[in-house]
Length: 417
Ligand SMILES: Nc1ncnc2c1ncn2[C@@H]1O[C@H](COP(=O)(O)OP(=O)(O)OP(=O)(O)O)[C@@H](O)[C@H]1O
Ligand SMILES: [Mg+2]
Image 1 (tube, helix red, strand yellow):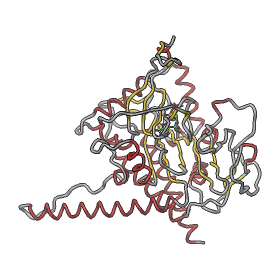
Image 2: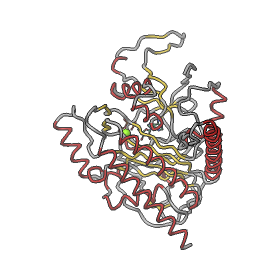
Image 3: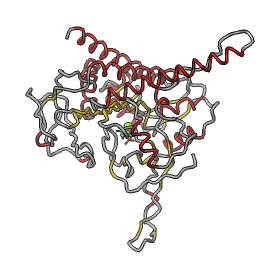
Image 4: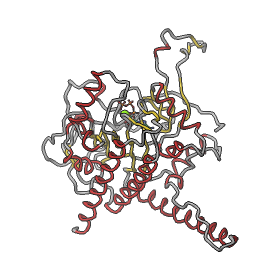
């Protein structure tokens, strides 16, 4: 891509649901700037420079777009000169990638850590022991997933219900469906708040407060419901004025089912790509985002359905034309199973060069109802001749069953309503 990128002033990433502090966003909010280890940078670069024939290229639609790296070179003085910065070599380089929650009105975001093993071959014995214990003490070892953290938009209180990392770290396998209910709630579901006003929590436990939206997020404590009461219908729920439980969720069940179907479709596609790749992901996550705004979601779903139908029509027309020319009368089979996101945006992004404003408008207007991508490649490496990552595949299967289970619950609730 030949266009240049303007970063502007960076701010902490709004809606960060897990991971370390230090994840930033650019002035427009469309980019994520994340300090990265050399291995993660190498992974993005390898993927970006892969040829169309390269097997790893198939992963590209499942990874945020990569725009390059950023390194702090100096400090701008008031006179406008760039002054060298002592110790700048110590400051890690950052990757500049697509912000997956950008363009959603109210992004519902979940970070699901994949895999059964949370340490790489180069880890110290102490780290191996610690990470193995963490895997066995959580859902990781048995199921290949841990719900690292998530946020769900709650329209009546104009705030996000935050499910902090302590939830995923303390639940048992049998409680995983409870996590699905928190992330995909039905209108009458009661979702207990997990917020604590504890003054002892560390800064890294606190969730980011996105200034732009004025939405405050909660912090982490074990997932014990406080007491049951009705959520207040205040404009904005500040941390002192948090409801103890949330109900009256506004996403319609029929829309939720469509969202779940789209997610299942993407999980299937990712599963088949990963089944063919010899690669290991340690500590990588699946980041899933869906539109939490109840009036935007149906429009976005409808638009996607129309675009899919249109693409199918176009593909059929091309096939008809091709078969008319074929010698044996056989129908030329071109791939119709386009990535639904490709229906909204050109994933490869190198055909069309738009100016910044046009690009922003286009993305905002055409935002897909869901996004599902892998993130966090600090411990990702190629393993030729060693087969696919079975732990990650197991995790995808677990997640698929959980989402199917949630879909069944919603369908039977609909039947009985
Ligand atoms: N491309 C992205 N778009 C939107 N949000 C992102 C993106 N990348 C990261 N995030 C947010 O930042 C969080 C942390 O990201 P990531 O896991 O890559 O960083 P990390 O600090 O290395 O995490 P870990 O502690 O798991 O090693 C994610 O849970 C997500 O909320
Ligand atoms: Mg992570």
